Image (cartoon, rainbow over the protein chains, first blue to last red):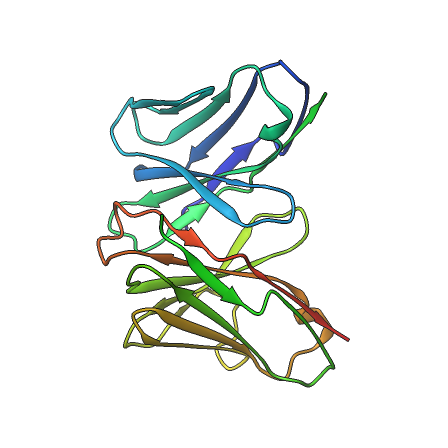
Length: 111
Length: 118
């Protein structure tokens, strides 16, 4: 079946450093979504990428969708303590009724 | 924004008890809802897809008779853990999609239910 691999599993950074998490799919995706789950909370939708090579920005967050629509990345510039949490990607395969979540990357930020 | 309400948020009960969890979309209609299970520091494991007016689609390895799903209306899906045992203890989260056009709609998650079976 479809697999969505996400790396790294954990990332510890000093406040102000950058952070990137990568998502790779074994099959071509119709779209990819990114979610953030704060400790003790539930996943919250961040963004959706649909087009090949698409790049979207939300303040310090930059999301990219690969040309082949098999990989994606989330980059945070100058991390803050409010960025802590687990970031999940979720890929939707064409004609599939459900997205497949990656294992998530848990970010901790040292002040 | 779209809000999904999940109740209860915390359940502690004895082994053998059946527990019902509700998932409601408050300000939109959800033709599709999803039920996930999440173990500590792990990803979301999809258990089943709930479709309004039809039978749920269960993922491989998930017991249909153990985890009963009912999606009776466009705003409510329920998950009943029947005859729960300690190994069923987990964090259960539901999510809902706004329309049947699943290719373009994000999932909106409930707050989750922490189930502890003694």
